[in-house]
Structure formats: structure tokens, C-alpha cells
Length: 486
Image (cartoon, rainbow, N blue to C red; front, side, top):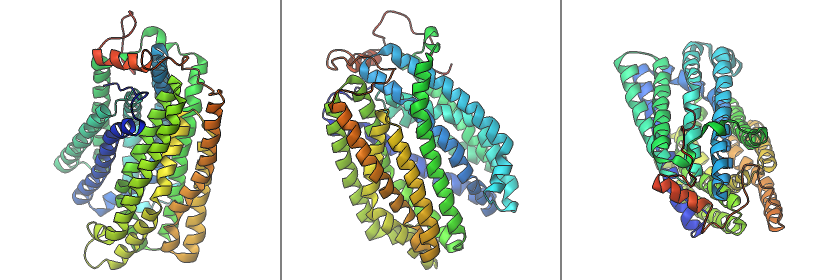
């Protein structure tokens, strides 16, 4: 159900919106662990390694696409906050068209050059055949994954974070069931595991479309809405492309770290991989708060509620930092015990290295907390330069730390790559946020082309849209036509 984020106590509004995002984040992390266990136990270690070898390539291409499609939903949230129903529909149409174009590029490029790219990334030759199969099947179905991400982002843009969670849970459970049926039951290899993911995502896309058609008339795109002005397409690309670029930067940094780890031996790789599993779940609260703060900022920006943006971001930072300190302290106390859940007996060196990773990263999670919230706020305001610049600094710091500190201090040097990258990014983001806020204070918000003039949120605007969505009607008299992407 659509939710208006332009009224109510900021920390409470952000917190309520964040909870389903957090649950979804944890579910996804647990699914990835379970999926790896099914593949590893059914097909063996080599098959699991082949799937793992595609991680960098997948992250590089699909990560870019995910970031970009999430960016396409920001103008939707801004228009929703402004109460401009026509702009909401045009934004959905623009995002649908651009996501389709991106899907074609990823599908064609990924399927044609997967094997070549894997070899360029240094994948062991014995793993290349199965890794290529897994990558080709995944890229062939990239459109399903990208549209699921886009539709989920659009539904969240109107304040509904619960429904995408339900569809994510369905997708994860269906994926696990299909992996068991296709891989273990039917005897297919890693290609079957990739196919299971594609089919599960396709089902989720269909569920999203059915939900929009039956329950969310605010997002129904009409025939006229498909004639999106070029200025609005450019605005979506202006926000979406830098967000995709930032995801690719993270992927490139991860590849650089992996290259350094490969020179340190199997124990270092095992320790880092194990620690990353714990790290992913630990960061879920902070990353979810960042997404919630971004949607909150976009809606209030569209509504012209600049006072709420400042107070909301300040409160979101406090919540994120408190969560970060609490989680970091827990990892400092029980990191070794948690790591032992993932490795067998007699692997004390792996446990010690993984625990060191969690100690260093956990003690500086508060920096990452600030990064998530401030970057999300700037992206929601349409300020793309500063987040992009911070991403470049983050990449440089991560690669520099991995290469220089890794060479000088081994594994203990590599574990500083992430915290130093976070610190460098925050050093760029905070001044950028201060400049953006001063611009808003001086009455020059640089309102995006998709948003109308702000309306009084307690009488019209986002409140009217939320009420219309809840009632199953639209505020104007023209009939709705079709949901996005159909």
C-alpha cells in the first residue's frame, strides 16, 4: 500500500519504512548462503567454485544495471511527493523503457562475451566451461532480474516497502525449490542453478505486474504516458547512470581486493570469504536505513518539505550510527564464535584472520552508516556529481589499500581496504551534503523536470495520492490502462 512519507515524525516514518527493507536484506543474504550450500553439496566443490568465479563479472554488469534501475525510481518518488500524478506515470513509463534498453545491452553483451571476460579476469581454465555456462544462462535472463529490481524500486518509491519484501521472499523460496528440483532432482548442472534463478525472478515480475494492475492504480501507465519527453528521459538517465556507475566502482574494487587475496594463499581467501558472509548480514541495518532515507528524501523534496529533509537525515544518521556501534561491538566480542559456525574444526588460522576482518570493519561501521544515509539523500535530491566523485575516491582508496597495504602487511593490510574506502567517500559526501542543504535554504532547489510545484502535503499532493492508492481509485476521472512494462 502506498505510504506518504511527507508527514509524521521523521525517525518513526523512516524506521517503519526501513523494517521490511531490513528483513528483505537478511532474507537475501540467507538465501545466497542456502543456494551455495545446495550447489556445493549437490554438484561438488568445483561447481561451487565455478559459480563463485562469475561473481566479479556478475557484480560488474548486473550491479551497474541494478544501481541504474534503482535510480530510475527516484524521479517517481519525487513526483509522488509533489502530488503530480501525471509525472508519476510518465516516470514509470520512462523507467520501463530505459530498463528494457539496458536489458537488451546486458543480455547481448553478457551472453556473447562471458567466456572471454571470465578468462580476462583470471578464472582458472578448469573452471571456465561451467562458469561460462552459468554466466550465459544468467545473462540470457537478465531482463527478468532487472525488471524485478525496477518494479520493486517503483513500488518502494510510493512508500510501500512491504510488498516488494513479500515478492522477494517468494522469489527466494521458489529459487531454492527450483534449484533442488532442477539440479538435484533432474540432474542438471550449474546451468540449471542459473535457470532456477531466472524462472524465480520471472515469477516475481509477473506478481509485481499483477499487484500493480489490481492494487496500485497510481502506477497505471496510460497510452499517452508512453510518449515521454526527452527532457524527462535525460533526467532519469542523469540520476540512474551515476548510480549504476557507483555500483560498478564497488565491483571493480572488489575484484582488486580479490586479486590481492589470491596472492596470499587459500587460508586468506577462505577467511575473507567467510567474513564477507557475516559482514553482509551485519551491514543490512545500515544499508536498509540508507534506502529508506533516500525514498524519504525524494518524496519530501518533491513536496517542497525541505525542513523535514534536514531533520529526517539527521535522525536517520543517528539511528544508523547507533545500530553500527551496537553491531560492531557484538562482532568484537563474538566474532570468532560466529566465524566458527562457517568453518570446520582445526582451522584456527582462518578463524583468526576472519575475526580480525570483522573487528576492523565492525569498529568502523559507524563511518559506513554515515556513508549510506548521506549518499542516499544526495541521490534522492538529484545531486549526482558528489556521490559519483565519492565513488571514485572510494575506488582509489580500496585499490590502494589492497595493493599497497596488502603487499606490506599481508592479510591484515587488506582488511583495511574497506574502512579506508568508506572514510574517503564520507570525506567527499559530507561537504557535498552541506552545499546541497544550503542551496535548498536559499530557495534554489533545482527541482527536477518530472516534479510539479509543491502542494500542501496535508491537503493535496502525496497525501491525496496515498489515499487514492489505498481506495483503489485515481484522483482524476480518466480510466487507467495498463501497468508498467506490459
